[in-house]
Length: 86
Image (tube, rainbow, N blue to C red; front, top):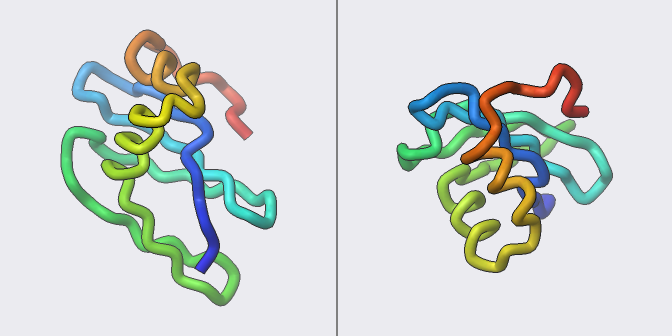
């Protein structure tokens, strides 16, 4: 199982429907779209591995250690989604 970290978070509408980009250990990125307010997990297929991501926990962890505060600012302050997030 690879470790993942949320590296980009964007708000898509007022319901906090967000697109989160996760950076994997091998440098690849995977994207997940969903409501941040809900508790849910998404199963990603990464090569031959299955990767379970808990988006709620990931965002809370990002908030708690303030590793990337700019990502949280994008979530709460940005009204637009950048055209290319990578």
